[in-house]
Image (cartoon, rainbow, N blue to C red; front, top):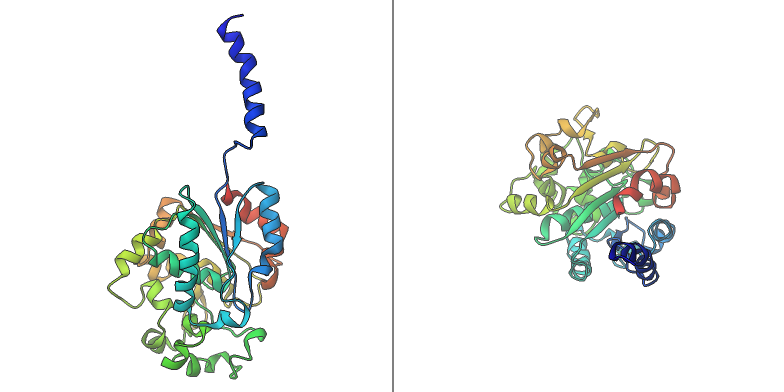
Length: 294
């Protein structure tokens, strides 16, 4: 028997043994970060979708700042989630995927900007108010006794509320631009709308990601405007200005334009999905998420 024939017979046998031993190309670990007034249990169905599509994937829904504690200041949450996620990344030198829902998307933006050596491959922002929020969902009215959104700035644009309630950190009133820039201590810093000494470093850190995946839709009923999930937002006339027309995109203050130029931004719009259903919707997973977790 020739060596060529022997190799032909041996190779399938070896492959069978390797497959039986589980020696296959491993999927990168997936880290999930929940939204406001929620917790890791909200990701039960999404975790199931991931494990079925990619058997053997290590999925971690971070158990931190759950439910009422999710209203704590954003920088405090960024620090806490960052410590947990840093440990997961250190055990995963091949890289990880970060999938963050709603407020969690902004928390993830914060840690991606401030962690200098992160190894996040895909950052998937699932229905997240990335450009801010200008609408009070019913579920949050207990935290905002002023139900009229035009008056929320009276609460949020103060030092006390900026240091105590997460939503105030990304409340973006298009009619109160000066106060937003003066008092808001989170979103305008992330966006580079308020210049600071760490802008260049944060931009470099953020650009370590390989892919930015933006997911949202017109029937969300919580994210306001819903285009904030795609970095669009209201101007002073409450007309939505799309991402590429935003000043932070044009000036490339945190790297968004660079990602776009690289071809590393994916936008997935899905109608008919309410806010609380994004992470349990199989169609959304199949269409918008699955391929980025390879």
